[in-house]
Image (cartoon, rainbow, N blue to C red; front, side, top):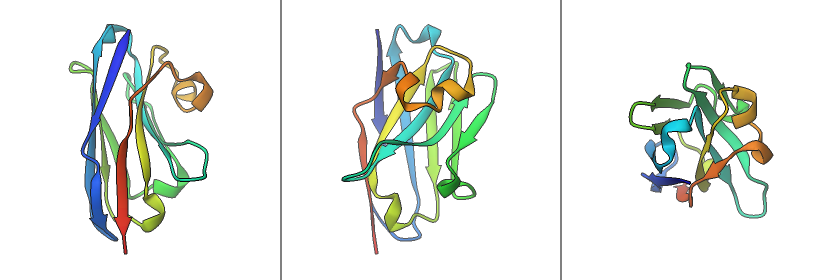
Length: 125
């Protein structure tokens, strides 16, 4: 089994920055893709960004140019640098991980193998 632990959430003002981290443990040797999803109150969980072990990356249109995903697969860790934050970025952010190398699989909510518990990000105006 794989455990994902997120950190770095919190309260920030509009225009500010936050960096989220997610570390995988357990049977993490077979993880080939990691990413971030978010869920705002009353809304469905949605992809924010994903990255595979071989460097394929996918971003939601709403965060392109503001968020950057990076990863260290030697440490099974993924990061999300969030800049120019907006109130609509307020959500619980979930780390995701998958055994498949496909960027399309980690980018599909129903296909993700493992989930973290989530970390709250609140952007205040």
